[in-house]
Image 1 (cartoon, rainbow, N blue to C red):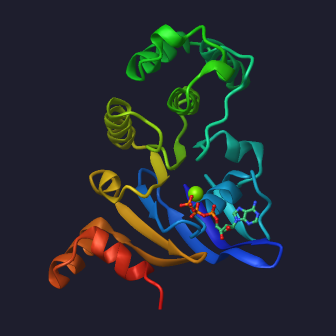
Image 2 (image 1 turned 135 degrees about the vertical axis):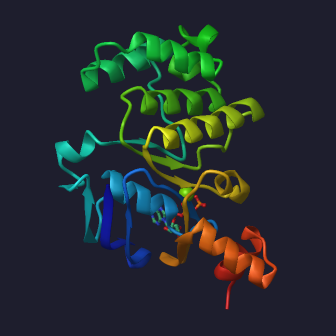
Length: 237
Ligand SMILES: Nc1ncnc2c1ncn2[C@@H]1O[C@H](COP(=O)(O)OP(=O)(O)OP(=O)(O)O)[C@@H](O)[C@H]1O
Ligand SMILES: [Mg+2]
């Protein structure tokens, strides 16, 4: 579903992403962990085409990631949610539905609003939404077209406990539906229950990439928790 080969991203001279390669099979849920500045957001932005990569190849569903065919496969929820100031919450959904040519979207939109307590905010303008509400709208917009592949960059930040619980539930549902998910997070235990695999980034490189089962085996042998392992792999020399 996703193949990244030798991805490099330089900002001026600094290598933010340093020649990384990985792939995600269809139906896999992968947690991307790493300390601040590790390169998680840069990696995602390069994959979804928001940043121009310096080198490397990225394929989504077998298509070059910048092609329209590839774009049909995925949705991306950015670290900082951006909404349209002058569209209402409902109009955001309508806009996405029109852009993707969705016909039967209203029931789905209503269900998503229900899930995220946005029902009574339907007619509020983007500019009048709180940070958490923007995040929720951004998630709803991403889920509306029912994509095969989802990129979530720090989805839990700014959400209230109920929304966090519902987002976890949505991850579980998406996983059950066979969707492929790459999710970056600092909340290690939030991915532990859903991720098939964990990738750990540090200084622009992938320093750990294994199934949760294998990691757990390693952890049990060493008497570690996932958090210990994370700190061990990302500690400064
Ligand atoms: N627009 C930019 N211009 C220059 N350098 C940047 C820019 N964006 C990010 N960087 C640098 O690239 C590196 C990786 O940043 P990135 O945002 O990808 O990290 P991250 O893993 O997402 O961190 P966080 O956990 O804080 O979100 C950092 O050293 C950062 O300073
Ligand atoms: Mg980030």
